[in-house]
Image 1 (cartoon, one colour):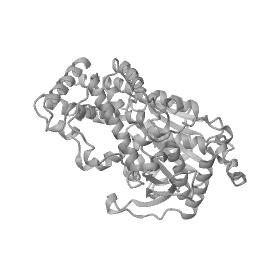
Image 2 (cartoon, helix red, strand yellow):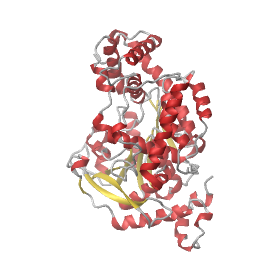
Image 3 (spheres, rainbow, N blue to C red):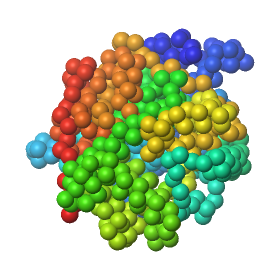
Image 4 (cartoon, one colour):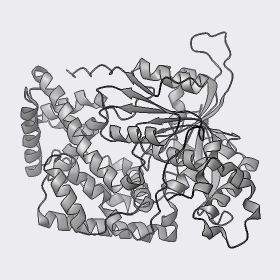
Length: 525
């Protein structure tokens, strides 16, 4: 449970009295030491700022982008102890009105973005201002991205040698045998041990609460009195933690593809819900393929398309395509179509070509890219560390086996793959955090904007409803009948108009507002 005095609207008042707290009494109130540490680190960052300059050659950034670093405590309870550096990127506000070249747009500050994960980097985000849908925001805001702790060059985490990260071709049984389960359990235990061995005692400090605290230090380093933030997917979760911890420091916040912040959902139950939602999205994709049977020849009903997929999977199990693509790689490639409808045409085309005797398109989209192994291994390590550290997980395999065997009967496509991704958390060696109860009352927090696609599988719609319920004065904009994961700045002008109106003018629609669905993708020919 959160401490009401600590996380209420009076939180800012509490900061002014921290110096009066008797020595040694910080641990009497959970989180008080970390709150004090955040204040210390933020004050230090504000004084130092960020020395932006050219990005290094290793970062491979265009000249319009500037890079710098900000130091944050590894452990906020010891703000003067070990520091780690987070890499930050920025493109300054252009001041150019895309609709009126003679008008100079006034700067509104920095817009900080996180793309999710956990484990994703936002270093390339500022370049999005080159896209037409983002030019109005790029005129008014410095666009700021960064690599959260553990990601990329920001005190990177690793759990295994990247040379051994890609294991392909691999299997993907929808109803795994007992021997296969034992094999995966052994791998999960080894992976958890590897995380502890490579990171040592620092591993415990990579979690969502510290990501939220880092965000406040970054705000201060940027010279912003209040934070303007857009988070996508997982970024919405620690954005919501920030809003709960530091409500008086929020200017505007956009939560795009919101995950369910209920402490009881973090993270085991959220993953069960995600697996169930992906089954629905997989059905949507198959229905679309069936509509275009004349193009793909995979079947004119979703059931027939499923049989085509199963036929391809069985063939790949017997003889992997190019020696690299097995059933696991096929499932992974089609799973990406569950995130983004833009992927539908080319995933369907690759499956069709493979079954017609041409494996090249499938190899191109599904084969592991060895050159990306270091980045992929790092991303997976951060994902695992953050999710495992954030909350308690079942530690008995029998619980995982019971829940997911039951779920796989109705949602076989993603269920077991999701289990293997998260199973190291059952054997995690670091202590767990108590999830914060995300909740603000009316008037505690400035109005915020939540965006959600109704059929999003990676962040099921119930999560957006729950976040909307928990954040007072929030507004929910729903894109109907579509499931793209993250809808800001996409092809839907209705969604983009609401985002621009909010971030540029502070205007919001009614508490519940809907936008019509975007057009379905056209089949690739």
